[in-house]
Length: 289
Ligand SMILES: Nc1nc2c(ncn2[C@@H]2O[C@H](COP(=O)(O)OP(=O)(O)OP(=O)(O)O)[C@@H](O)[C@H]2O)c(=O)[nH]1
Image (cartoon, rainbow, N blue to C red; front, side, top):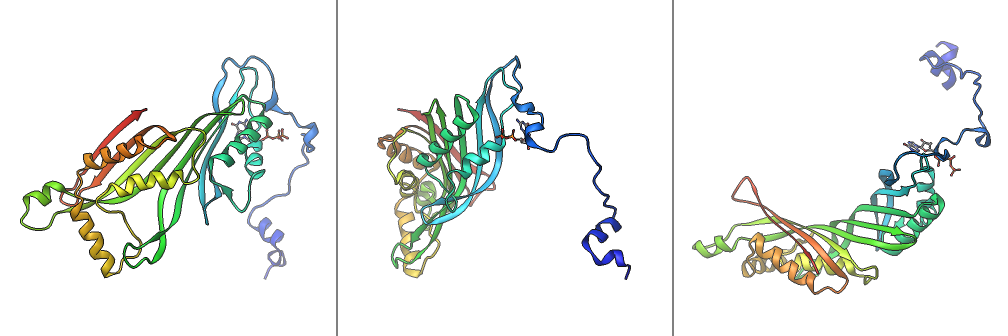
């Protein structure tokens, strides 16, 4: 074998790598131009500038999961750019085996971000799969269920000005019309429920659980990871006893959300993946208290 191929460096050169040139630009940070910090009239202030699609570990309860982050700040008219590296530094400052995915932690991240960027507002959206313990209805066997969750928050001058949570979960709906007109049986389907709730700044620790309960308890049946025969009988009969049109489910969830004191408004969409059609049925409403 060619001696040059016995080392990495030799192989790299063999495959076309070349030595770095002796450059003329500074290599020490203090001597580098800080273009982002240029000050003059740049025509417009910017509402949001930052990063998207950042994947970073988050913790929800006992489970660690992957969060997809968007983080941004305001930018004044006389500043050319933000120091983007400080966004990750602000997240890292509050990292503890994953970033705890709750509004208190997000607020501390945003205040760190706003302060280090010297801007008047900062915003975050984090989407993650929310894993939780789910027990089968009769045999009480534990397994892991999941829903999709997005937490969004904006702070201005260290005050929370906007806070929302979006939860998407799947349920069973059994068709009331089918039950009514058929000699036996009724078709059912998987319903996808999405709730975006506008929240007061103070929320109870179990705010996600309360919202998910409104979404699932009002369906014909909720979904379970493990079902033994006794569970399956209970789930099947529960669905037959609680038939729901897509409109029924939407309105019943809305009625529960109106009663939650920490919810100031909401948007709900229910979409049924129809089992007797190739299309889906859907209903959507928004409500401000
Ligand atoms: N402002 C801005 N930065 C960008 C953009 N795209 C990439 N960057 C990155 O921003 C990084 C520089 O981050 P800064 O935080 O400004 O680095 P720095 O000035 O050494 O950091 P400080 O010591 O905190 O001031 C570079 O590595 C760029 O890759 C962009 O469109 N706008």
